[in-house]
Length: 196
Image: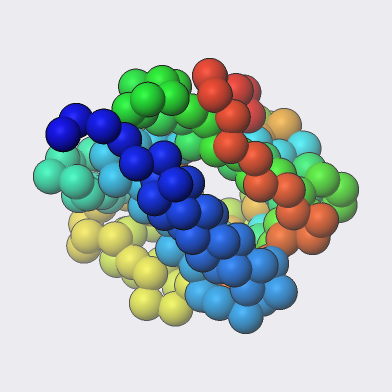
């Protein structure tokens, strides 16, 4: 009573890690659609450069894990990120304490995606928009992923292209038709070791 069966614990963790590895490998090969929404936890993404085609943005609400967060919804028909890093920090895990999971894909085009949608709360970087329309009705945006629109009468923007250098963002959810990683590296470490 009250004892940990370490063999069983290691087995369960091992199977979970193998399953995660299979899913991530499938995503890296472009074989799986991807959706990240970490229960009640935001995550950070950084990249040296993001190059996007077909960009839209408007306000929205992310409702996950019984909580509601006001977010900026950013959508790209296609996006490529150079020197990509994504980190999830989970404090106070039983037995091990604070844990950080990081996915990195170094180099040009380390991460690329089709029909990428990000629900974010913070974004910094240098932004250049190609052929922008700023202040368009969020329900009438047409340049981003198909059927991605905001509430009628709310503020929206769209552009043919969007380029962000020195990207740093905090998000609650990411969805995409397909996400690809080149030279992906997944690490899980004790402590706080976020992308920024």
